[in-house]
Length: 259
Image (cartoon, rainbow, N blue to C red; front, top):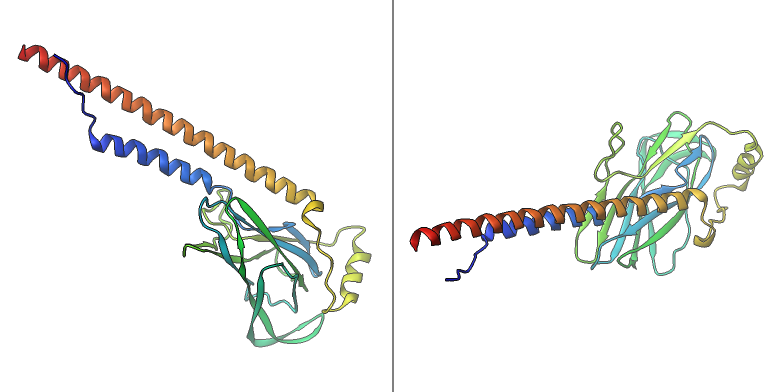
């Protein structure tokens, strides 16, 4: 006499939930907002790009906010127009005026907001800025970033460096270095250009090697995450197989006793 084997619902739900959680984590593992290049010269003026990837499968990114460190006010913040996007600079009054390469500074840009455009799923956008004069009394600048999606989800990339382990939502970090040999002439030219001159930003087709390395690293992390997800699903399937066998044996033994 044949019997129908029933799989416990909680077992099925546990296996599916475990696999889905791993897949979601793998899909968003490399979706960090970063600043490129990751280093700049202390006391100089630098052209940087905030890279904002969107690895959501269904919703587009519609707003990006970047906060400047309030403890290190910058006298020069210039943005490059991005087709389809509006940019807004918010300034704040300084509690105490500071001297800068462009004179006495009484207020400084505290936040840059890009809105009105979209970053489609599985695409990224770069937002170019010119920043100066970079501080000389610190080795890093941390730019907290907030990424808003069309479906209302908000991801806050605001966690600073914390030891060897990378935080779950790391903020973009710019590392500041001392003057390099051969850069003195370029450094002086940047200062001579003045606050209203913007250095040309590289086009995506001529992105620096650091950008390409970052993209390669992101793809490697994503691939590793997918492999982990496949292993987790395989383990879940194996556990389900064992449970089915155990259930079948129990039913068979029960049927033998009944007969």
